[in-house]
Image (cartoon, rainbow, N blue to C red):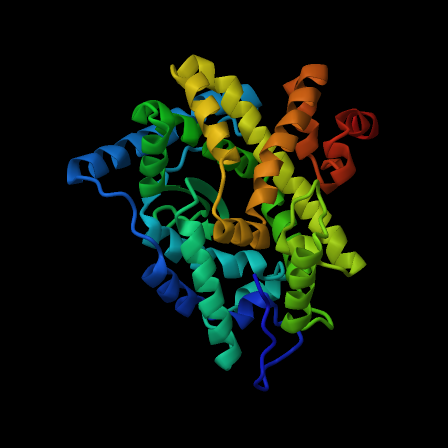
Length: 367
């Protein structure tokens, strides 16, 4: 998201992008302009909620069995949200993800309210963020958020399932609702297992995102100018996909960008690998669901959708599924899942971006 420099006399030392966005306003704007979900009866809504809660629990066992991760850990309850609920949750989570990892003293003295940006610049950024949240709220099927706190247990990490979006997609695909809901949960539960079994991943992600989004001498105008020039000239990175974060130019930020991209590609590819490994035994119509879903991913978008997806990196995320799954498939086929799990040991065992397309190079370096 855009980082807006404060025009008032606000402290400049540890202020990051999260502090420069009015997240409360972002949530308000996002909920106001978000598109309504599909029309459903109360019975359909209640049944979908019940099935998704059950599927999130049923998916946990097969995912743990295939991955060999999180054995013996408790199985928390998922949150079933509508689009407004997801916007509220995202507006609370984003400041935590964008903020630098605090020291022990900073964490002890931190305020509980991270939702207000400074002055008029924070409100402008809040309006921009609200538009982004509104767009994303109709695209997210499910999400494991390692930065949110479960209100029931008080533990960090929440699995969220956006019911109206799941219903909309299963209808569009003409998929069996029960099968599709479990299939979605297999993917999202894999993310929960990844972070639950490897708690260091959350801080690793947060520290790199904070470095990536931290400002140095660049203004918002500079960043927008680079985006505009890139779109005009066709300048592309990462196999032709233009994403806002791919326009970062400082060496330090680009290194953080590559670490974030490699981590995201691994997490998404691993989840897709597990989904396909578990699916045939637990989701009867998995083959038709996978074929229809992949076709939907590749389907045409209108020009405005293409522009927004490019700017926020959604097309890059789609590429992550394909490249990440190919990486995981290859490594697991060569060395088995137990040896593959060495990847979760530390930042040093994470794949480099160049190794995503050359998995044998990761095997040689790490194993």
